[in-house]
Image 1 (cartoon, rainbow, N blue to C red):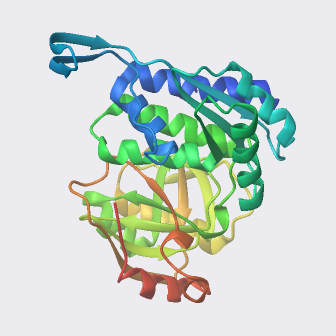
Image 2: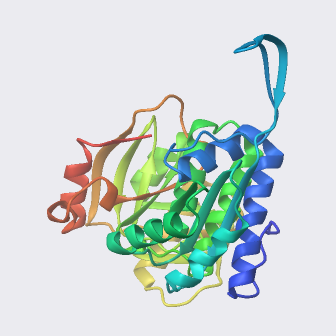
Length: 333
């Protein structure tokens, strides 16, 4: 089992804040542009953000042309973290004291609950009232906003293995610690490649036991730049299989004889010994074909999660068959 980069022993606010800072620091270490991009994205592009020196030449001024010019722009980001509530607005406003006039200033309120529109207006009004000569950009953020922006950076740079590991660790941390919960409409899909026909025939998928730590409702098989199937998972069996003796050693409970027989028959057909895996047993009846296409270039390097409510309205989310039909006209990146 791979060691996580993020501490998971406490849900105290200082631990959560530390892990947010650790993620941003690691992002900056991987590539400064990644860090700049996530800050600009979180800020909706309102402020151009520079974390490193800017080099220019032939800069025109009132006094003439400057041959060479190097600038490091001052910036400050203040993060106030709450786990499941909102900070008192008057307390939040006091943090504006740390900002200066000649810097890029961002004040983040990071929680699982957002201020409403009127509260955001009040925060901005009070910041301008108490610090009239200081430009402060207020960002009203959920933990999911941070994760979404990190995922977007990876989607644009999915060749970067270290970035993928960082995303997976941070995603798992957020969901395991209860900072984000969108499992109701969440789809997990995994690439299949050459095993696709076996997956389809036996209606199952296997992977290491420590994969897919987020809660999800729907599962899909991906091949050739599209999610090809969607269903719920009937049961998950953790087991080892010896192909020579055809012995199936099950380490989980709560499975029917039919489900166990399906798994054994499928592994005999697969004709390889397997250890340390879990098997998603998909339903034989409510198993639907779809065509949820990836419109961006390239395939995917590993499994992905998608919140189906980002693509479908409530009328299309009533049941799995309806979801499968509706996704045929949708695309993702």
